[in-house]
Figure 1 (spheres, rainbow, N blue to C red):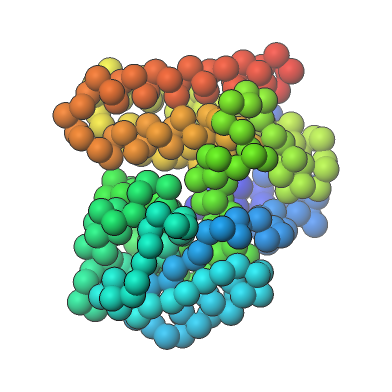
Figure 2 (cartoon, rainbow, N blue to C red; figure 1 turned 90 degrees about the vertical axis):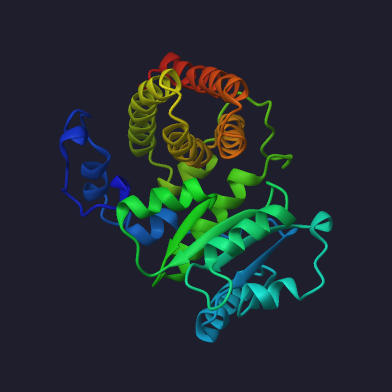
Length: 293
């Protein structure tokens, strides 16, 4: 469970090191519930079609109704075979795929492999599953999934995950230029209800977690632990995207893609690690200069 979604008042050992914790502030402002924290307007890019592949008609219908409500284009299929029997033109549009892990016939993992062969890396693939151990979630990212959606899910959870995925993949969005080194904190302020104190606590939490991950990233790079690099790159990319640091998120997304590629291409992987690390260090320096540390 994300530390931002724990029960009010719950503080683990790592969080105790951070004064005036986010949890305490959230508890103080009771109006900031889980649903409002991640509630969003429709931010999913209209040029991206959502493709749902699930053998349960109820899940497909439910997703389509929710997405239609948010004016998001979607289509559903009952199997991987049915999807590939359709006439797809991968180069004409980017997609976000929602695929069930336990499909009849072509399994979720096999479908993932075939999607990666047919569609380029700018198409996101989200695994949907009802049963998953903590260690299994990491395996899904290693396999090549970009995100995981647990069943049952709420409307807010589905839309929030799609928005997060879109922001992570929107490398050519004019509103999120990759060469912009200044993070866009607008979404953070909206989630915090324009509360400066809460925004400051979010940033401090971000800096603390990112410094910790940077230490682990350096260690994994030194040991050439590609699976660990993949796990860390995925986590940091999502966190930076949530903070509005889109250029840094893009660098770690590229590192993630590199790590998923040729496992023997150590030189290119280390160059990607260095580039992503440099960008994250600049971001942390930006926050430190403004006393957000």
